[in-house]
Image 1: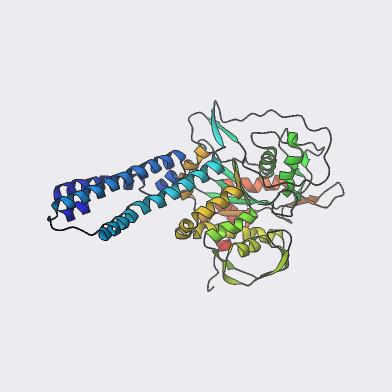
Image 2: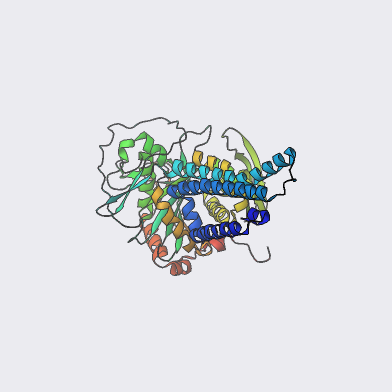
Amino acid sequence: GAGHFVAGDARRGRLLLLIDVVILVTIAFLFRDKVAVLTAWIRPASLAWMMIGNLIFLGYRVWAADDAYRSAKGNQPGNVKPTTAALLGGATVLAVILVTPHIVFGYYDVVQYDLIQTVFGSNTTVAAASDTTTTTNAAPPSTDATGATVTTEPSPSTSTTVVATGSAPWNGTDRLNILLIGGDFGEGRTGIRTDTMITVSIDPSTGETAMFSVPRNWTQAPLPDGMGVWDCDCYPELINELWVAGERYPDAFPGPGTPSENAVKGVISEFLGIPIDYYAMVNLDGFVDIVDALGGVEIYVPSAVIDEKYPNEDGTSYERIDIQPGWQKFDGHLALAYSRSRNQDSDYFRMSRQRCVIEAMMEQADPISLLANFGSLADVIKETMITDIPIDTLPALVELLPKVDLANVVSVRFIPPEYHLKFRDDGKPGRVANIDLVHERVQLVINDPQRAVTELGLEKLDDVCGTPEGA
């Protein structure tokens, strides 16, 4: 409409200005808050409609510009004739101004649509008569496989989640439990080691959240009914080898997902005594690129982390890591080293560092860096993330996230010696966890988090990862 005012056609200018106002008010209403924007941004149908709207709006703007030009041309004195160069220059500038925003928006829209469909598109939620899932247990293999299994990075699989007809994904449930896994399946490594296993448990009604960290080196973890081929009714080896166990013994881990998914979710569920609704696994090598795409992460380091022989991401070389106390700005490589290194202390200290890195990334995600690196970030996520979260569950999950207060997340690490029950009784090295005590503590944290903090001497995540006074 501005062009029409300049051309002297005020009546048409006011009409187009009114149309502009209606369009802007409609957009402001549809995307009135951050949740509405994020919800639209993760719905494939919304992305498709936004692309259609983008093209229609582009056509409208091109028509308005052409109409303004014709109005101006009709109102020019007969002896005023712009040169060819002026016409070409003006047309070029106008075309760039008109088209560029729509090309940029279209690029982000297409990349996001491809990302959502690639990572979540094969996961579906199927309506059922009740919220109970029934699986048929396959017969276990008759012989044990031996030897190492060399695996490649897994590709996204088709998973099905069964919920009650007409219900929201977690309506009627006390908790939403999502297992976050750091999978170490880089070059030069045998199998997929789930070295990081953190279950995030959220109360959908209040947003109260707990994080339960399970160390990688517990053995003889309990198995759900119908799983396993071992006489102990447990998974006898290190718990971080479960993904490989699912590949070796596929019939031993029946369920709605792949055998490896069923193995990890089933055992962690039995270990904690709570159902695992969904999981998300990220390749730790891809973690490097994700942190870099976010513009790095700033973390307060309470004590030095020195590792004389830290294994690089390629799995074939080593380097010396020297991270001093105080505020540090990490790129992806150093953030991963800070999270993974354990030579200077233990697995249990690095579990605390991992939780702090996750919190810092969630708090410090820079929208400008995200937009600037969105294409490369999407490629990394598509290549390194595996999940069974259904695509139609994403909007409800986004609406739940604002309820979560990161500063008040209660965090528990189930580590020795407190949760140690005994050593393995088959002569092999390894610790066995006190599962009854684990279940008792999980229920205490879930049902009365304030009491759990007091009685167990727990620290909330903000206290664990916060900055000491004077730092």
